[in-house]
Each structure stands twice: as structure tokens, then as C-alpha cells.
Length: 241
Image (cartoon, rainbow, N blue to C red; front, side, top):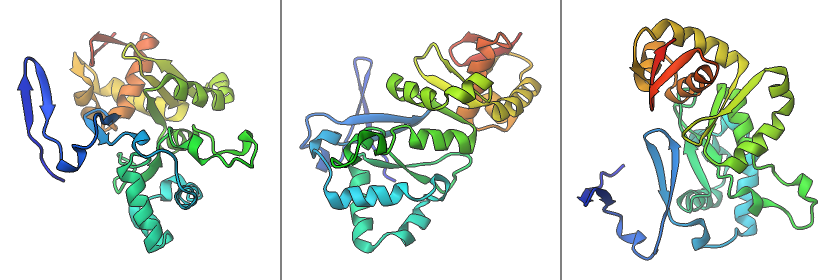
């Protein structure tokens, strides 16, 4: 990890970037979770994937999501494949997701990359679905926050039966993000939040007091606010009804 300088000019902030990024006219910025961002060269900077790279990604997909830790994957790949994986990560096709349940991190494939994995000789229905990692993540940790409308729609289609039965709940927040939680996580988190929330509190303080992952706490708070169980006084600040 390296620290970089921030320059402030006319109410705007500018980062001092590494020298190897000077050759690009623009970069891509992805929000992984609140307070965490991934800055990468544009995926279009090198178009397409080689067949060898596709094989590495498919091999990664064959590993159960919760087992895709860097240590486990390192044992599953050859030296050449590990070099390819490192390059794919630098190009933004792959990132390591870290959360309360995945303290050691698990490899996650960018949704933008799935269309590149389609085999021309196979019907589209056999191609890896774009929502696969989102679905797995929701099922394993109980919540997920999605920024892109199309990705949220695809996942909601996959969850149509769960949402109809009430075993999963999804809403769109005023911030434009989509919050989806399982009924099990919702029930558990609601109890913890209700016990912790006695006055106006920001989401980070609520999560700490309730001993919840911040993203999971925020997702449940959005659902509770939608149902009139809490009030969002101002952005990110909640109060009991």
C-alpha cells in the first residue's frame, strides 16, 4: 500500500498518480463499498481477452465464491496462470472483495467481464450469467448493494421467486443504489439496530453499536426506512420512529 498526495484547487480534489498511468487520457473509478474505491486503467485500454486469460477466469469461476481466497487460488493456479490473474486484476477484470465475512478477501470477477467470457460456439444461455457473483455474495453474507440499474435488474430476475415469497427484499434508495437483503439477515439485523438506535445516529455509529457490517447495516436501514420503522433525518443519519 502506498500513500498518495491530494491537491485541492477551487473546491476540487486531485490525486498524484503513479508514473505508469500517465499514458492514459482517462481512468476508471469503481466504488467497492463506502470509503473504498478501485482506480484502474480503462478496461477498453486493451480490448478483449486471450483464450488463456478466459481459461483462467473460468477456472476462477469453477471455485466456490467463499473459497476464492488469494491463498486458495494461489494453490489452484499454475505460476503462469497466477501471472495472468495478476495482469487481469491490474486491468480491472478481477478484484479482491473484503468484508466482515471475508476478512482474507475473495476474488470477484467484474460484471463487465462476463460478456467477454461467452464462447462463440455456445448458445448465449450457457454463458456465465452476469449476476452469478452478486447472487453468491447475497446468499453467503445476507445482503448486497448494487450501483448499476442493469445489474440490479438481472439479479432481481434471478431472485423473482425469493422476492415473491418474502425470503429476499430489495429497494432502490434515494442515492440511486439498490439494496437487497435476505429475510434471515433482515430479521437478525433489525433486532440489533432497534436495540442500538435510541437517538439520531449516523449509519457508521449504528453499525458499530449493533455489531454489524456497515454495508449490511445500511441495507437494512434503507429497508426499515422504506417500511416506516426508522426515519432518515438527513443523508446517512437515522432516528427511531
